[in-house]
Image (cartoon, rainbow, N blue to C red; front, side):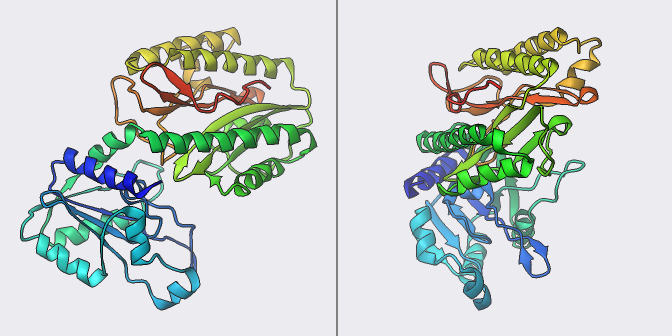
Length: 397
């Protein structure tokens, strides 16, 4: 992404946000074991506003004066030697923010800004859901710091979400690139599939296909063969492929910070007639559901259309005998937003708008029969219709 993209994002946020002082932090590193950290993943909102991929930085924006600052962290010399660090001039060039302050200078800046601002807009942590992972501590740490300075905090999460929900031209181009890398990898893997014997070998083909073009995985790969496909987020990827059956592959590349999210269910050997029938039902539903999408379509109408299609297909397979059977055999949402995050927020819209990118991913899972099938594509809502970013990849077995 060009620095102008991030500069423009900050300008649009300044115009939208009621808070006149905006302070957003990068993620911090998280311990993995002993003295080793997990691979660093940047806070998506901070990336959207700065383009920086380093930990512990801070963005400060005074929307009244139009001034912007980056505050760099103190990086110990040993860390610089072993892991490297982002230089101030590199951060400025990447983000388009001209002034970069040391941590000490940044502390003085915040104290000075408190004299002219009583409130500070920042991205606050949401309440944890049951079973959810612990959030990165950076946001709550920043909130405590700002409270100690007597700022009244205003959550600007919805403002950033509103901006991020509608993809701009550079974002669309990045997602097309991520889609193209993913589609190419799927086609390579499908050709190699007859020679593979284990889920891990299949994943390794994607690892290589992504790595050799400078990309990487947008999320933990799912390679689920046979009954393991009924575990929606199965990621062990270490079981033998069946001699005759199906394998669900849910994998996407990440390019320039933006994700693809694609699922195909492929034949291994000769699947049974029942497996083929389930795949055919999901494939029919998939294409019909995509055909529903258009700009201006009410989300409620989309969901009702999806329900009718999926219920018809479940009934055709003899699976819809009670109302509870619908969510028993189709237990997940049909769509989610896609962007910097693989589950990007669409901002809770009532209607679909041009610039939104979402997945379409019908699936049917029959644990008692050991059969799971899912097909997923990435759809951009345009001014006149839709663009299937991953439509070049066949949905067939």
